[in-house]
Amino acid sequence: MRLILSTDAVATPSPAVLHELREKHPECPPPPTSAPLAPPAAAAPPITAAEVFSAVHTFPRGSAAGPDGLRPQRLLDMVGHKFDDHCLNAWFLDDGTVGGKPATVAHVFGEIIRKAREIGLVVNEAKCELHISGGTEQAQNDAVAFFQELYPKLRILTNTDFLLLGAPVLVEGIGPAVAEKCATVKMACDRLELLPRHHALFLLKNCLGAPKIIYMLRCCNAWKQPQQLYQLDEAMRLCFQTLCNVRTSHDDYPCWRQATLPVSRGGIGIRRAEELALPAFLASIHSVTDLISLLLPDHPAVNISAAFELWKTNARLAELPEHNARKAQRTWDLPLCNASLSVLLDIFRDDEINRARLLAQSTPEAGIWLNALPSAHIGNLLDDDTVKISVGLRLGVSICEAHSCSKCHKPVDVYGHHGLSCAFSAGRHPRHGGLNSILCRSLVSAGIPAKLEPRGTSHTSDRRPDGCTTFAWQRGMCLAWDVTCVDTVAMSHRKATSVTAGSAAQAEDRKRDSFRLANQE
Image (cartoon, rainbow, N blue to C red; front, side, top):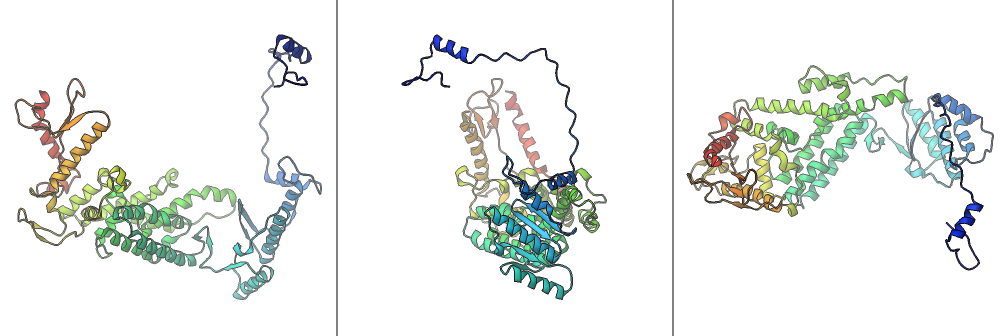
């Protein structure tokens, strides 16, 4: 704030100067505190669209611009034309859709070009698309010739390439759209082969698989075209088979069916388009039902009774989900996944090994490695052989040829389960030591000194835990841990693990009993 300016410098902020300012600019008296409060204003009456249009029509011709820069004359021009009652005129930002009779659409399109030119914009006719529907073949040809004469650069669409934001609008366009997705998957597979297998599997599952097709499945009734979706699923299967170096086929139903389940249901997460199509469509149609009713109040409701019946059949349920939960795709998808898991368990009813494996893989902890970010910097990146073996063990596919163990001379089947429980296996001790090392390093990185295999922890027994903290953890006692690695499909555990997942972990309870005396000391 400038106080008082002189010819050469700013005035000095002295008491005399402040007194002079107060005389020239006296203080405003404070507002009265005893004034009665004004009564609350009544709620404004609602304004209808008809009232808005009526007010716009009252604008005089050539009205000047308002504070927002929008000339009332333009509003008057926009609502002043009398178009066909059945004309569709829908816009979102700079993307518009105009529909109606050929003469009406041509007139509206011409008005758009003229109005855009007035504000310095140019409509690119080469990016505008025209689709003719209804009428006889001769009428359609006449309409195309009419528009090509007016706008020669306009792109004419057929029923197969009529897309809206990448999704087919008509049933005839589903096949070409799926074929394009298949070509994209094949191209992605060729490029993913150049990456480490763990990176490639992560990208296929989370980026290039279901996320690439979910929008198309939600925007059209692709669930009515299972043969078209089968081609896309086959392309995904071949890509998965190549990247993970495991053999899967549609003839081997349990293997490929399990791979396409979510990770939380024992699968790999490579979802099938044929299975996702129905839940995606049902969730999408329920999400927009209210909006459709507002935009088109006189339009009849979409008949999706056939989709409901198909979903109840596939999900093995007699009732549909609650109305307030039907907008979520998960609500429609999980019952189908649970039904597929039940089918697999029924197939393995008399197979203890595969049933125990499937129950164990469907637990939340068993699939964490599939959702972890494959980064070498944080120690989560698996080598190619480890990815192959991990996927093979999870799906129960062949990972080796049948042979005899070179250590214990026991037979080894094609599934490689013997190495998980062999007393001379080279993988048991590294797996056990790796878990202990992770726990120890985690404690040390948190500022808690710890050591592995401490001696002298018990005076009455030679047993010792796998590790413990150097200083007291709680109540003057150190924290000790002991890792137990069990084999779910071992001969001694199959009977229990084929009934209840996690039954093999009861070995931990027996180990706790052996350390109970040491804990008391």
